[in-house]
Length: 304
Image 1: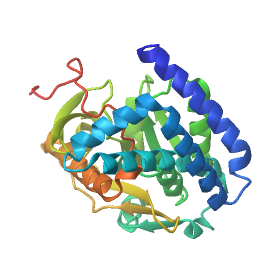
Image 2: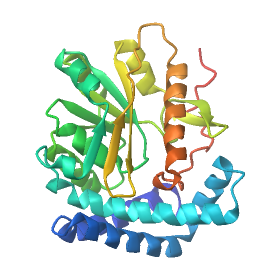
Image 3: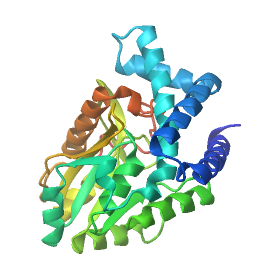
Image 4: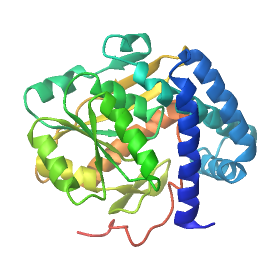
């Protein structure tokens, strides 16, 4: 299987696993769900040989001074993290505005909420580090208008599952490929809402090369252009699972944007912050992603 066919197959498998996990994941204590997730991740580390090899190759790029044992340990921990993430997503409907402090520490969100309450739009840039769906869900629980741009998955069922899950917390999902996506994003910002982008992957969209672990990596430039065009405040946000099981969400200092700013410099600055977070908890990033892949068709690094 190649390309889109393989991606579609993987998405179907993930969806079926998520449905199976959801049947029990929201009905058992979170700590038990995480234990099940760790076991599932350990199994995946053994059987997903291609993904493990890709993760090890990327870890060698990012951490050339590490030993092979360190890279293997991190790859194994990454699979366990992803297994726990799967069960955490199933558990999310149990998290409410009233009880979220039992599972989540939220730091630095007050300036963001103040801007929204003043009618000013905010753009949040985040990454596939930690449980990014948990970050989205908890942000929605603050009762402000929140929208997330997503790349449509190959499985309509998976799209529906994630969209409906986010909607439970009041988070609206905008599909990147829809005809109305640009209008919806602009309207969200003009109405003083929060618009979130995940910007740490190499995808089929207009991109520029910025430093990532010391090597140029294609990174979507559209969100940064939108921030400059609308003069919105950009707030980088990250989340990590602590050793005690608490989710620690951090909203970093806002970056003020104005017309004439360089969007490439902006996305490079955000990417550097994302790299810093990945270095904090390398096992909580998706290392099997082709982050340094060349895509000449989408590379606009040298465009004026």
